[in-house]
Image 1 (cartoon, rainbow, N blue to C red):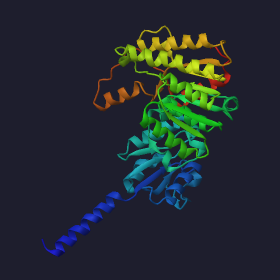
Image 2 (cartoon, rainbow, N blue to C red):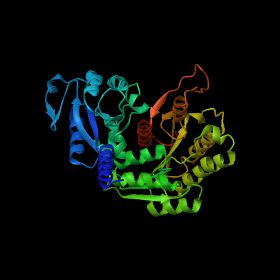
Image 3 (cartoon, helix red, strand yellow):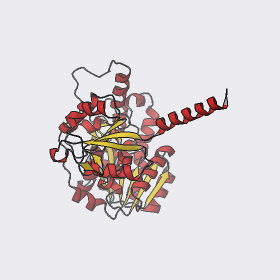
Image 4 (cartoon, helix red, strand yellow):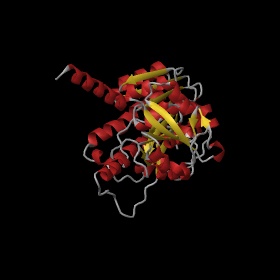
Length: 382
């Protein structure tokens, strides 16, 4: 091969590589405050991999104008037409304040295009209300949940956690990690996390340190069935509020793992609850499940046993013991939704308990908000 041919090949290879590794051209849906902030972040961080090329927004007054130097080409119903006429690599929905109906309409428009779609979380779920590239994620079922948002008394919740040392067991799990994130935003004196999975603990710790740099955070790798470790942690940090989220939750698996289910869900709860009482912790919140109501499986039975123990503990010490139950949580560990997704991806069928069954879902943030409110309002023994 001649030098000229070799040089041409090298130039062609690197030109192709540059095209493949260049920034993704982004069409942003929503030119309001959130879209403005997001595009500003993209333009400021030139290594982020995103290049905004245009906006679409239903506000007619914005049409023909520019936001951060990026043109607003028209309304969102023109999406298919714009994608065909512009080189677009990804569509970003920057509408965190959109209603569920608006969000579903926008997603329907996006489905008509063959371009990947990403979105921002709901406004309530943005860390400190800040819009940034790091908040972008693929559109999930949670983004399309079709019902009114729950109403919470954040004043009561913050009053119960502000300037308190708060501990979360199982803080690396789906519920535990979200609890930690929400608690971190309520100005606790310190947040103590106990988690036995090192990778999960690492993930939640890094995320919290990034999002809440001023938070006094202690992350402990440990197991709630290790009584010596549990008593040592509580004695050292003296938590005033404990959220006990550590548990096994996978119903079919626990049917054949009875010993481990009892050991973790019952004995582990007994150890941490007794340690909380011994250290005069103010509030102990057990996170339980609707499957503890007239349980028909091992998981439900172990959680019911944990509930009965915590109810019996209430009144024996200064600690208020409160139990919170909830049902199906979208995206949580053990949820049926990942199974449904996998079955759909394989072309079906979708296996359900009964063709006529109805399932009622809440999102992980909603579940955690209800847990926090229950902890703030509970008198003990509930």
